[in-house]
Length: 132
Image 1 (cartoon, rainbow, N blue to C red):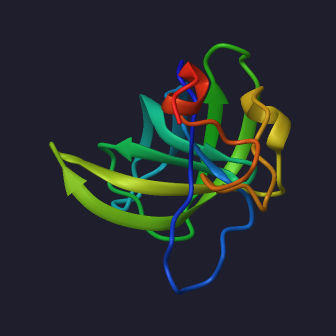
Image 2 (image 1 turned 180 degrees about the horizontal axis):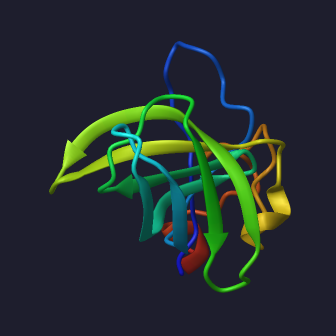
């Protein structure tokens, strides 16, 4: 599972925590837009201390409550749908937000809030090889 810190440069509101591109296997359960119970196994596209971005075949509505289970740790966390994005390959990008921040849920160390690729601790491939 590779971790790649990503920063976004949009002029809107700043993220509350840094996003890390990481695939984490999950089980999601909830009620879809038609009022039917669903259970779906998927994986994250990106994670942060406040939730995750996933691809979901089930059609859900904004604000819907979803129960997320981390398949490796079997830890469960209630979330709600905070973002509905584009559909690709029959699945929608869905942003899920924890009921309360849970940075330890993912078992990764997130970059500090002020981290950017220009941060002094960020190393480039050329500097790691000794190139200038």
